[in-house]
Image (tube, rainbow, N blue to C red; front, side, top):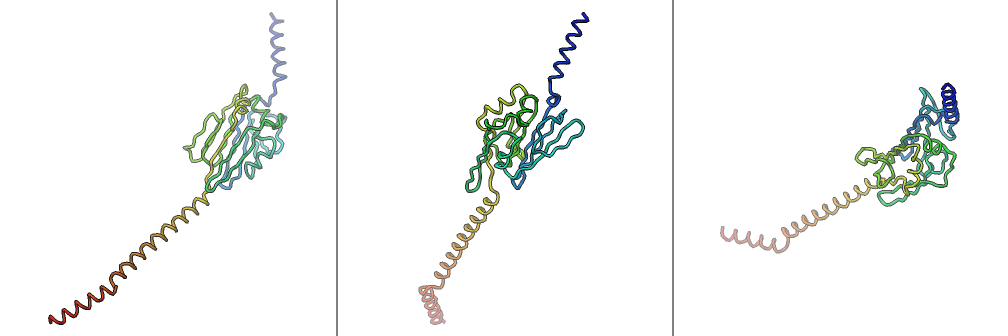
Length: 230
């Protein structure tokens, strides 16, 4: 009996020895777009250890949590950097709005932080892209919030496959507030100008009718008749 217990204990130690401690916890990966279009990326990992690939990140740790942070100028710069979410970016600009499409990049580095986490640990990925979410592969997406956010709840067993199978990771419509404001001002100016010109035309018409030669002759005739009657 003791031999069986000892054997089970040895197997348990071997399993622990070959299970990375860095993959024992969970992670929360957040990307938030500010008013200037900068993308603030933060990643919090529980029960982590220094063996994780954190190249390109600013890191800090405390209370068993490793926190990574970095900032990107836009989505194109984000796609160009390594060791983040493996996405490709396509932005189409129109007159008053633009569409940003983020697609999964199958050609990304297989040894980056994303693959280390998603393939082995449960966690959440959230993206707030400062626009209306048109399409996404997210577990949940809410356009009713002030800052619409797409959230992926991923498990280690199917996390990477769930992300990779979707043709579009996220697609967002962003309206250009400056162009919309200028357009409203332009149409407002045009509307006021049309109203003013119409008003002036009516006034001129009334003046022309009131002081036309025909009316003046009628007034003169009326004055003569009054004088004769007197």
